[in-house]
Image (cartoon, rainbow, N blue to C red):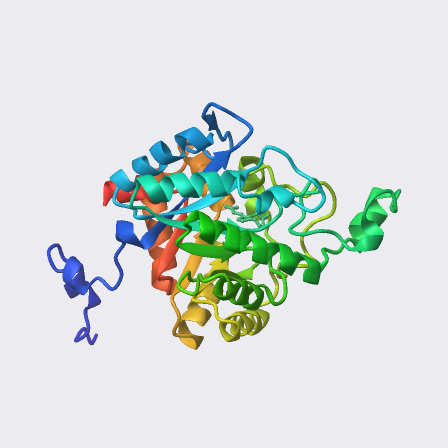
Length: 335
Ligand code: PBG
């Protein structure tokens, strides 16, 4: 028996830290924050224990609580006071994100990233205006509608430009387009530059999959599609090479940070982006990934803290530089 090699030598107490390849730091995390224009009190989000929607008046207090844990960045999501087919409250100067961003950037040091998308603002819940023939009373049968539904890509780009510029005017430090429209990064980059916001970076949801793990978020942000699904614009979970093509396009269009979403079921994609590109890679540990660990912990089947840390560590080990996660505050507090 040749035991020249004994890997256990390096697993003893006091040396494990020295040889550890990966570590977590509160500054790796971005904490999602939900601001709700339809309420004047905090509302817990049932499927995401510990998270709540806060009114605009409480946005600063909510962000201050995040900062206290050592986390320095937040991602803002908004629930507008009203919705319409175009999602026009998304770029309103007095919109929920614009108001919240102005206050948070004026009163705190948080790095504010805004989600640039339309699904929380359109009355049909899709990520952009629908193509002409599907609007209004044209389609009687809901299933037929779902089968042929398409978001109007190019019309959506105009809206995304307006949203991104309005967020930047309100003080957003970074914008994060999540709609998976073709050409969205280039359109937003050009619009920001024209408006004098050439220093505002873009974190593209570059490889965003059509995932069932977004379920709890759709309650949280009230953005579930009223009919159909998002497979006409979000990526097919079966595809890995396509992610590289998607990401390459965003890089060519000027994306500063490349995001993969969800995180845990897509660590192969995180790892391949790490290998193929030298941009910062972000991973979004989504609502369903958070909810399932909480549900199992509630039943006493898993130790919540342990599995949360292990999940985030594995995302980092796969190659993510930054992690968007609902565990941000809890894990940062523990570190
Ligand atoms: C909006 C958006 C979604 C998420 C982030 N931005 C929902 C969706 O695409 O349906 C999901 C986040 C999560 O599940 O935590 N486009």
